[in-house]
Image 1: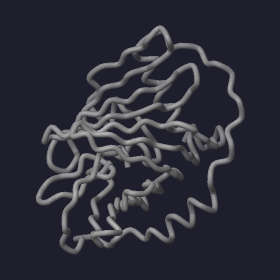
Image 2: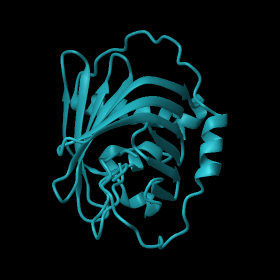
Image 3: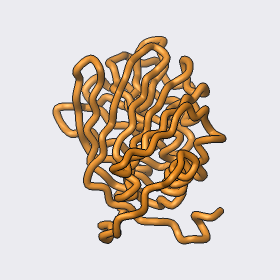
Image 4: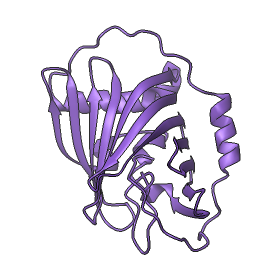
Length: 232
């Protein structure tokens, strides 16, 4: 996620995903307009993804290129998504909550108590808020590892520097790539995607300062774009 901290860059949500474990800071007024969380959350609440129908097991890609194509196609097919997430970091911090996503652009990480955080994106900016501290840190979406979740079209080979693609015998695809456009330096991101279930399972972000955050998804509900929308 995006992580707020003094003079340091977010590595994504907190520092959405895509999401890195936030650390407590007292932020200065943001340089760009704050994201309107009420409008974004209202839109996401009004259009939550319906329960996904049972999907037959998919075939396992037979090459790294086919696996990467499958992952790209998955992201580009999503219209709306909701899921439960568990976020953990190498310093032992752990939190959980719900993720709501409406592509392109809108996302909301709602952390469950005792966390007082929320992360909201309107497609242009990502706001990381701490309700207890009253902080509001705003970042350009282009400078966070959350881009692959919310951008309209995803092509990991073009958008990032893909380092490795592996396909397990169980159908689990692991994609490792670097994003040099993130604030503060290059972030290394690892995605895990279940090809048989056709579902994103988790991502891990290692930021330029060596801070690692993993987000694991469960209870995914996805509504798909029409064939014409997905093809554009």
